[in-house]
Structures are given as structure tokens and as C-alpha cells.
Image (tube, rainbow, N blue to C red; front, side, top):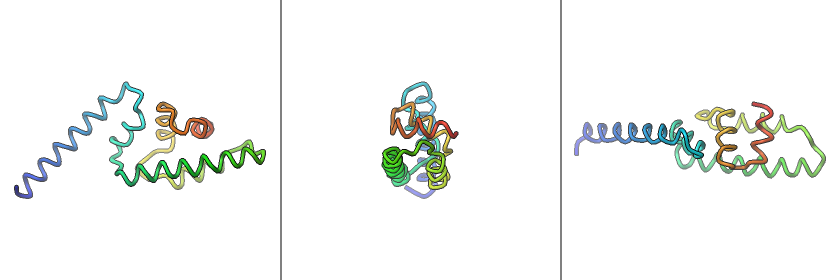
Length: 111
């Protein structure tokens, strides 16, 4: 297989992924759709979940200390988020899939 054939196959795979993302449009898998649409790698997706885990932990600690405003935490989340994801889209997609739901419901106030 030469380079042109590989490139054509890659374009076909990318096209099929876009079709799959469109097919996910009406489902409860909005975060999965976001990953495909924005071409996140597995490593980037894992980094996103690690970031959410850290933010969730810090939010719970802050709640225990009596904090009520999590806007600074959201700002930090937004600044650390991969540039491939829009914070608003990520928050709503996670809410849709019930991923880090309490964290995302707090962050929803700031998008």
C-alpha cells in the first residue's frame, strides 16, 4: 500500500467518524459526540477526565469549608481545558451524560 492509498483510507475513516458523530446527535452520548467532533485523542480525553476528577475533589473540599461560589474553580477548569473543547459545550455534554454531574451543574452557572 502506497502513501496515497493510506491517505485516502485515512480520509475515509475520518469521514466515517464524522458520520458517526452526526448519528450520535440525538442520543444521550453527547460527550462522546464532542470527543469525535473535536478529534480528541485518547490521551486528551483521559486528561479531561483527570481534570474533572481534580476539580470535583477540590469543589467538594471547598464545599466542606463553606465555599458557595465556584466561579474561580470554573475559570481554572476553563484555562486548563484542551483548546479543542469549548467549556460550555463540555459542561452541557457532561450534564447530558451525567458525567461529574454535581461539578458540571455548578459550572453550568458560569457558562
